[in-house]
Length: 92
Image (tube, rainbow, N blue to C red; front, side):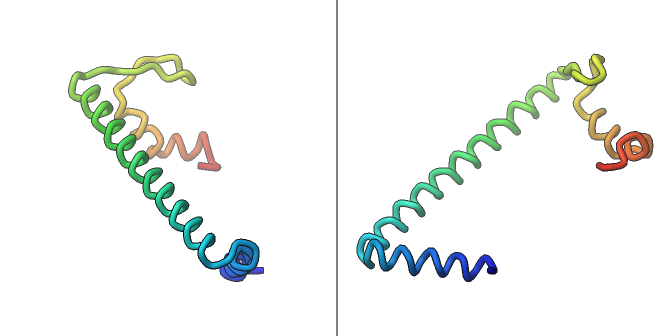
């Protein structure tokens, strides 16, 4: 069963059980909830990006729990893009 047919089945079942008016109001509530979630997600991402940028501008470092060493935040990215990381972690 494909995703489209499953969605159609759920829609038809909802139409039969709830009727067109209740189904319409239910979809409206779902759409509003989804929009609120997306807004909260955008706000969280922008807040997190601002905090990371501020920490980077201040020159803060962090400690990696795996290595136990203090490093610059950008060194993690350089490590994971390196050849030694691909050899050490072949699944990545």
